Length: 368
Ligand code: AMP
Image 1 (cartoon, rainbow, N blue to C red):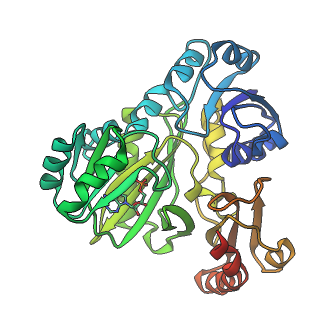
Image 2 (image 1 turned 180 degrees about the horizontal axis):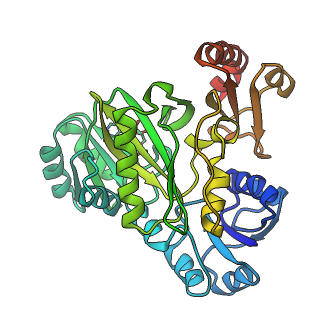
């Protein structure tokens, strides 16, 4: 089977790594030359919306997927008119706009922060008074890793926030005083079979994911069942095929959905070593029409992102249970260059290993 992937970043690279043992072959399309996946498979270097290039890309492929949710929907629809594309274009469309994404959550009974769409300074004033202070203002499109996002703490912040947004369509959300940020990775096959990974606790700094820890305590809990129920609702409503990530805030034992990603997700990298079947393999199994793999954990695990600077490879590998993944990127401040997953037999052993990794990566991570 020949799989085409829109986007050739680290997610594409890890998809290819998971797909080769299944005999899959890959072709990538990405405007940035020398992208991480290009070290493993053919990369066509082009913008996503060149119809002539899309034809060339599609030739000989059996199925197309994407690793990046900001590919133009028109490009995906164009491909969809000639071959299977999963997840379906409707899923992509729904998440590209934070308003339609939140409206979908609301329609499906998935709790969210209060939200209001905004197009003018007057709208913004009304919206802030509706959701209350502090309020979180986000661009509806193309925001990621905390970019295109402002906090309005007092009335005097409204005008400067409007100016900073520079005319972009906005959504205003109530500020959620959460205890934890959690995410769930869900997967649905072409046959409609579903599977869920355990909730993961995520830690961000400067809007970038730094660490994801599998929360052993939530396995089998009401929180886990709730997250699975919400994810199942979204999967079914969209006729979804592939891996879907939903990010939640935990507030006094309940979940409030923040956003979702119609793709494999950074908070699921631990599954490569920490689960029976990785998110990458399960995404591929889903999109090529194979049965899903078991999502159970293998012991305890946690993932640390390598951001901005690289650690000493040998030192990382000296920590038992440490698995290093480098994406082949040139270091630059704020850039995700790789990750380390620590695995262990139990939580105590994992804590020891994470402490060793923290002292070793501390300086590196501060540089990021
Ligand atoms: P996002 O771009 O929506 O993923 O937001 C980036 C980060 O900002 C989240 O991981 C949260 O830490 C924070 N954040 C986003 N929306 C809210 C909200 N409504 N209330 C509180 N914090 C938020």
